[in-house]
Image (cartoon, rainbow, N blue to C red; front, side, top):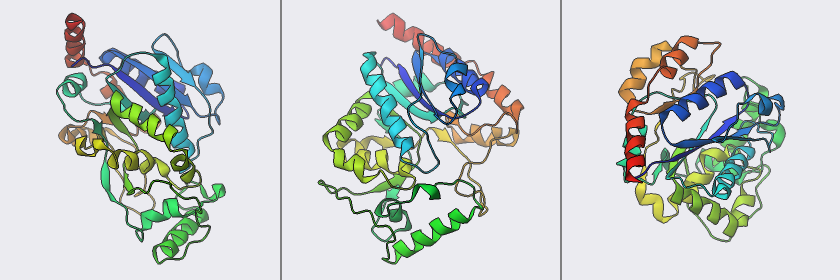
Length: 307
């Protein structure tokens, strides 16, 4: 199987870090990179290095927990399709990721899976997670600060929804009922799955509208479509390593990776990891940027000979 990747990256800061990650991606094999730069940081578009393999756009102001995360991903998917370039797989990640293991192209070449995405489970009506789409969430509550009063308001609204009391109920209806699923935001899927996601959204605009005022739709929107499709039998676990905290303050977000995580990442067998912060640990970033991608480049050469 000839592997060619289209990388979709949502970025909001630190052009130097983004450029280093993109350089790493381009060194691994046959790929192009499609970047969405957050409109809240207008200088970012000019600072990101573009070329015939790197494309950068800025369409949305992306707030934590907002539907703009999904909109940005759909926007990039359509750009990938409009490019007319042939890809085997599509990666969805951020500018704070890195490749942490050689052999990605070889792995994808030999894998029958259609989608590598974490699916936790189906969401039932009275699950706390159901409040994310059963409630029409005010935009002002989309604040990431874990100790902000709005976080406690969000928790209160979710607990009320769990017992059947819905403040700000989502009155939109779905023409085609679905079973809802939640999991991880980031994924690697085949181009075939990406085309299906685009087509589903175009054929079911009510499904897209249903999520517009949701909370953290990025962990449910695409996951629900995939798990209600023929591709549900071809789903494998995500290829991304992320370590979540255990305290009230950190448990809902991936904590910054440091050199102390290197052994854990190696044992995980994952090919990507997030999130990296140069101001916290630049040495661990340098460690992974030094990876050679030798196995992947070997596969690229095999792909070239096969053509």
